[in-house]
Length: 411
Ligand SMILES: [Zn+2]
Image (cartoon, rainbow, N blue to C red; front, side, top):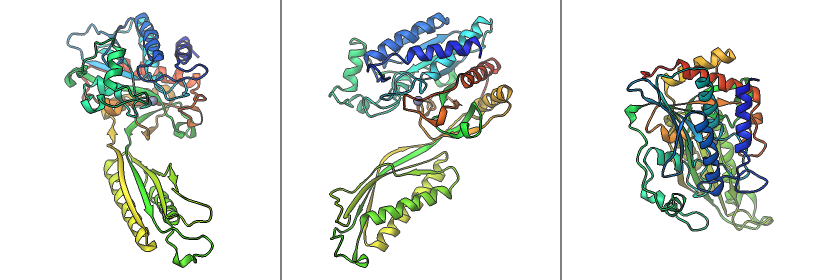
């Protein structure tokens, strides 16, 4: 492993110690640990020759100016906040890896024909305000008034928290750039899934970030004595929900790329000797194509209606979240793939089933993502791990990509 990968690992380790909770890594939006993290990473950015600022929502931004006249700006970054009891790679990798890459290129005397901005987004995980992407939304200038009114568990509004963090200097954020001044946004992130590991590859390129729909479903049947009610006279809400669960599994398996999950299910007022009168559960459906996802949802709704009718149940659907899919930029992704092939021999294209800052930044600039293998696909856990050799591959890929990227790239 080269000196650059060693440097990256030492930075990841040091940043991984910056936490709000002793003994485990928890760094939430605008917390004291976040302020310390921004100070620390800001210092590393300055040492790498970047000009550093923090915007009004706590995003840390380091900028390296190109000598080229009328150059556009390439954005590189990810988030510096974490979930509770997190690993040290999810987020920070996409900030620190580009930082080491830029420092290395600079040391080698490489001048890029575009400006580079490395962004450590202040919020992506949605922990404090139960609303995700607050950092990137601020960066692109779309933090609506209703979001600023959200309150955390302590009752502090987002607007109040931002006023405290900026010592009274918070103003509603404006977009950091005009669209035409941007070359694109590239995010390096651990895969948080098992595909690269199964295919024995260190890195892969993301074709799209899956769109997702979430629902709350409620099945209504009829309670009855578990001993005295014959099977043919029952209206068992759980049996209906269970048939539906098996049905969604079959539908997802029959639709390439579709994933569908019931992650929470409850039998309110249930008892061991009572036929379930009611079952509530969630449903999470994702696909890289919005058209395929919507077609699948229509099928699933029809299936639920059919099961309910046959079993004499009522079934209600309540949508709780819908995010469209984000297609990655073909022009940026092709170049990323080329760099991957030149470093690891072959490339693999994956769909990101999880959301990332790129979902929001895509409203301002073309986006691309480089995924790095993580052990067991594990993430949002202290045992999250990416091998040093894989980080070294990712570093070489990003440096190759940066050196080959022209300033006049268009999709
Ligand atoms: Zn992340």
